[in-house]
Each structure stands twice: as C-alpha cells, then as structure tokens.
Length: 382
Ligand SMILES: NC(=O)c1ccc[n+]([C@@H]2O[C@H](COP(=O)([O-])OP(=O)(O)OC[C@H]3O[C@@H](n4cnc5c(N)ncnc54)[C@H](O)[C@@H]3O)[C@@H](O)[C@H]2O)c1
Image (cartoon, rainbow, N blue to C red; front, side):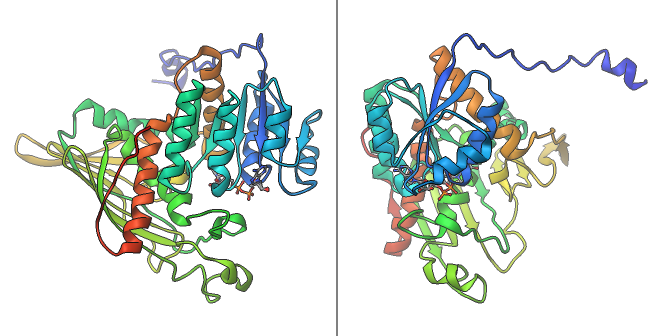
C-alpha cells in the first residue's frame, strides 16, 4: 500500500490552539544554564511573558535577556527583592542551584504565586517537606521540573505497568550513568548543589520507575556514595577537582511499600560503559528499558517484554516512539503543561506529593551512606 493511501488512515497530529486571551506573567529566578531552556520555550509560547527576573550575580540577568532578545524584563538582585516588588505575577520558575530551591519556592508560594521548581526538588527531605507545607497553605500550583515525564516512551512504561501485563511488580533495577561525564559550574560543590550525581541524574532514574509504579511509599534504604573521580585531577580538570566536594557515584537498595525492591545506582564517572539497563520484574512478565541516559528523556533502543506464552519463553519488542528531544520538545511540554494547569486550575503536571518520595530516597541514601547501614525512611507530616 502506498504511503499516500496509508496517510489517509493516520489522524493528523494537531497542536492545541493556545488561548491568548489571558497572558501569564512569569518571573525567572536564577538566570544560569537551565534558565536558557525556559527563555527558549517561553519565546515560543504566545500566552506567557517573562515580566521579571533575578540573579545574585550583578549584570548576569541583564546580559541573559540581551542575549535572548527579550525586552522589558524588570530585573532584581535576588529573589526576595523580586517577590517584594512584583505584584502581578502568575508564576515563578525557580532556576537556581539546588541549595536555593527551598527558600525561593517557599517565599514565592507564601506570596501566593504558582511555582515551577527545577529538579532535584531540594537537597534534603526536610526542605522538601517545608515546600510542600507552603504549597498546601498557599493553595497554589507547584510542579517539579522532570521533563522526561513528557516523553511518549516514558509514558509507555507507566501504561505497560498499569495494563497489568507485568503482573505484580516485585523487583526493579534502575539507574545508569556516564563512563566519563562530570559536570562543572555549580553542580560540584556542596554549598550550591548540596548533592552530586544523586541529585543531578539519580532523581531522574528514580522518577522513571517510581512514576510507572505509582510512587509507593519508600520504607527503608541502604545507601552508598563515593567520589573517586570528581576530586581527582587525573579524571577532572585540576581547578574543578580542587573544589569538588559532592558524590560522583551512588548506589542503594530501597524497600518500597507493597513488597517492591529497587536496586539503584548512578554515576557521573565510572570504569565501565554502563551499569546495565533498567529492568522491572513482575510475576507475569519482565520489562527491559535501555535507559541509561534517562535524564534526556530518551532510550538507547526499544523496550522489550519477556513472558511465557503457552509454556514457551517469548519476548517481544515495544516499538520506540519518536521523541521531540529533551531541551526543545520535552521542556516545552513541561512549561506548557504547567501554564495550562494555572489557566484551568488543574493539578500540577508533576506533583510534589510524588517527588517528596523521590527526595526522601535521595535523602535516605545520603544519611544511610554516612551511617554505613540501612535506615528507615521517616516521612514527615506535611
Ligand atoms: N531540567 C533539566 O533538564 C535541568 C538541566 C540542568 C540543570 N537543571 C537544574 O536547574 C538548576 C539550576 O542549574 P543551572 O545549571 O542553571 O545553575 P547555574 O549555577 O548555571 O544558575 C543558577 C543561577 O541562580 C542564581 N541564584 C541562586 N540563588 C538565587 C537567588 N536566591 N535569587 C536569584 N538568583 C539566584 C545564581 O546566581 C546563578 O546564576 C539546578 O537545580 C539543576 O539541577 C535542570
């Protein structure tokens, strides 16, 4: 059959028309690297305007908006000055390094402003709980920046689990990492990042599987973390090695409610090409996800399902769906879905009640690693 004939049966993909009758006023807090993705996206969204921005580094925000050709943005020396002066904001994008996430998100929510907060939610579980309390008090929308969630293949993992095809899920292996891929800038110091590979890419690996299985409560964790590469001038440039004081590798064995085990590892650098695919084992079938680059919202190949049919061991491939790419398409969907939630009064696309558990695990890994033993995860009242 020719493509012409086939295309008659393929429904055309239509982007929903954007309602421009209400323009949303956004502010950007922190005009560093990730703020660039917000600026790029917002330029493409006709119903959002960047009204204000702040950065601690003098002149940085000004240069940022000049570079993007965005005019008329009111600029402030820090988030507090911005929140005190601005009276008509619909939302803030918290694009600061991790150790400033909590104070910026809480201050914005306390002013009654919706927040899209970059990942990881925070550094510690206590900070995350404080944000959720401020969110609840404010009645505003708080969404956390996990754009890989917007990828159709990622959504397919959840659809497969929800379909019951796997039976009862009991064991998950997740996490990947890079053979060599240590970032620099503010990612590698405790005073700015708080945590290293764990917070940068580990949170994505956890979200990939926890979202699929409905974010069960984490119960206990036995965690490990190390830094054999980042501070070593053999593997990192000497200036960055000298200031590196976070983890570059972490591993954990996590018990979740419902008798589910998560075996997790993440690396910015390691002496192996990959620590393996993500696998989800169920009583009826198993799922293999070649996802060691999950922070990009992409897979290196199609997923595979392994099961038994009429006594025979069979496996089949789940076709890989096209992905629009992380910083273009998926990021745009993340910002669009947040703006839509504001306009419709809908739920946060990536809600804090889920990501609180993600943060509880990261926090548990750090605490357990420092104590050198398994610990119980105590979820705070929020
Ligand atoms: N979603 C993604 O794909 C993705 C990718 C990269 C980074 N991130 C996350 O984005 C966040 C920022 O990363 P980055 O690489 O852009 O960092 P960055 O260091 O390049 O930029 C952060 C900026 O925030 C400013 N800042 C800090 N506290 C402030 C405050 N109170 N008020 C105003 N400005 C303040 C700093 O001066 C700095 O310029 C991190 O949490 C990181 O994990 C997300």
